[in-house]
Image (cartoon, rainbow, N blue to C red; front, side, top):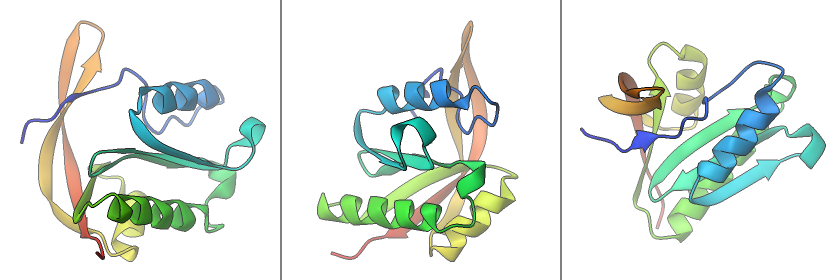
Length: 137
């Protein structure tokens, strides 16, 4: 399944410089950005693109606090309200922590798809897990 090229921003950055990367990701998202926490201490965020939960990130200090569950529930609600019947997201193969979380939230692993990530000098093909969820109407 062909996909659009991703932003040059690094997804899920875990370095101390992650705040700038988050701002870059948020700017790159075309619609539907929600942020949890104060501007100077972001706990997490998500970004929607059409029927896709394009980005979901929770900072390390906020993990296990319910922030991720609140963000994904809000994203699902907004997607449903916008008329989306089947939402989807992708997850890096091997990111078992995220996969367990999505499955706990009743997302179903639909298979493996290829993302095309922009890198200096071109694109990089990356296989990822695709998750889907039927939303209430």
